[in-house]
Each structure stands twice: as C-alpha cells, then as structure tokens.
Length: 363
Image (cartoon, rainbow, N blue to C red; front, side):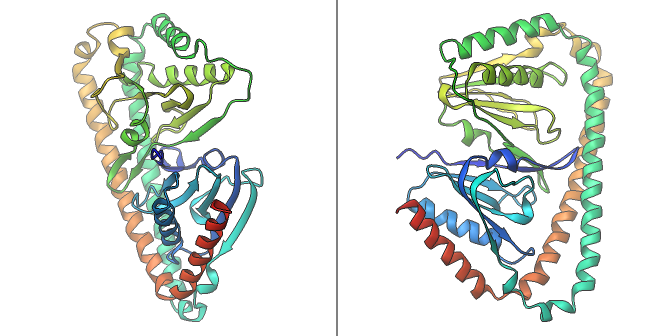
C-alpha cells in the first residue's frame, strides 16, 4: 500500500486570533471520539499512541498537529474508514453534523481533585497570564498584517488586473477541461502551516510529494496570488471538482494552496515563509510579478519596501516571543494537572480506545 498519510493543522494562531477549521477538516466522518478533560492529562499521548498503532497496521492517517507544540497531536483520522479522534480542548466548530456518531470520552475522572485543590489559585493566575500572552501574540500578528497591507499597496498599484484575470482563465481551462461533472463537490478547508513558538512551520513537501503536478506561485505581496487561488477554488466547485483549500496561517481570510486530488495537482503560494523551488518533473513556476506587474516596481520603491519589510519582520518576531511565552505558561498549567493525574486510568482509556478502533477497522 502506498502511504498517503498526511499532516495538517486545523487550528492556527493568526492575525485574527485563534482560528479553527475543524468543522471542515473533520467533516463527513462515520464516527468521531472527542476526548474531554483538563490539560496535562494525557489526551495527546492517547492520540499519539493510537496513531503509532494504526501506522504499524498500515492504515492511512490524517494527523492534526498542535500549533503550540507541532510535535503533539490535536487529532487523528483513519481516512479509509472515516473514523477520528480529537482533543476537545483543542477544537472548536465540531457539531452534530460533523460525524454520523460523536462519542465523548472523558478523562477528568483520572484527576485527583483533592490533590489539585491546593494549586487552583496558582493555576488561575497562570491561566490569566496565558490569556494575556495569547492576546499579545495575536495583536502582534494583527499589527504585522497591517504592515503587510502597506507592503501590498505598492504592488497593487502596479498590477495589471486584466492580465491577472487572463492567467486565471487560462489556468481554469487548462486544469478543469474534461473533468467537469455534476456530482456534489467536497471542499475541505485546512491549514498546511501555522505560526508556532519556534516560528512558521509547514507541511507542504509531504502534502505535495505524491502529486504529479505542482505549480509554484511566485510574486510579491499584492500580486494576486490569493485572489488567483480563490478564483480557482470557486471554479472547481462550479465544475464539480473536489478541492482541498488551505488557508493562510497569518490571515485565514486569504488562501495559500489548493490541492485537486483527482487531478493529482497542487498550486500554492511559494513565497516566504513557505518558499520552495521546483526540484522534479511535473514542477512549474507561475511568476505573477513577472507576468502581471509593471517592470521595475521593486527598484522604484526599493527604499520604502525595505523599511516596510524590516518593520514586518520585527513585528512577527515580537509576536512569536509572546507565543513562546504562552507555550511556557501552558506547560506550567499542564504540570499541575499531570501531577494530580492517575495515568493508569489514562492508559486504560487509551487501551479501550485502541480495542474499539481495532474492532471498527477490522470487523
């Protein structure tokens, strides 16, 4: 079996605050287990051990990573049978329509409340500091996005929108001709990357590795990359072509990548902080700056653009520092709950879930 497992984020630390895509990322499941309970009680460990077991069995999985600690998992889907598990504290947007059956699995009973009680005041103080750290990080990202808007204006004024529309039309025709059908489409919304305490992290190489065709969009801020992707996504929906829509980790109102599974094709914004270059057959570059912008724009505004770029980088670094502080505060909170948790109870819950997954996957 070809390994088609994939890594994603379904939540992000963005310029618009904490942003969640679980309603779409987990849509259409037959069954979804939702782990409920306080932090530090082993929910991520349960998910990781289940993932390791399923991987050993050769199952294809969708992994959903934590943007605070990308090495930890927020959730998991066994894709061939549409069964998932998620940390309820790390998700929003899950509704009764997300899965045919939703099963809450509580872990709070493993916590010794008496042992925890003497630390509740300290925990509350840490939670307030944590909320402040997140708020400061989000304000930093919002300030960076405002600076990015300044950056974009220099290029928008030099943009040939007629040419950009022509490029979009040619792509739509080239991608979808012969693939139109009337069946309902699936538009699944995800993040391929996230702002983390260590900076930007993305999974583009793995998500596109098995695809026959990859289109690397190059350009400048304001050169129409996200607009192009929105037009392609809309056209795919109109023509009945399934599409995975990847939102920008800084501004979730913008798009950074589309994957068309049945076309074995990805098209994505390949500029910093997720800059990649063609390295195999089937790779091609679409340079919006070269194709649709007044030549010499970079040179004409070099001084102004350099100052904006410096301010943008500084604000992004500042926001990342606050996010790192949030990770440390979150770790302190978790340590109190972990110290009060009977992990033999957690292990028993994990073992029961493994047995249930085994019975569902191999009836």
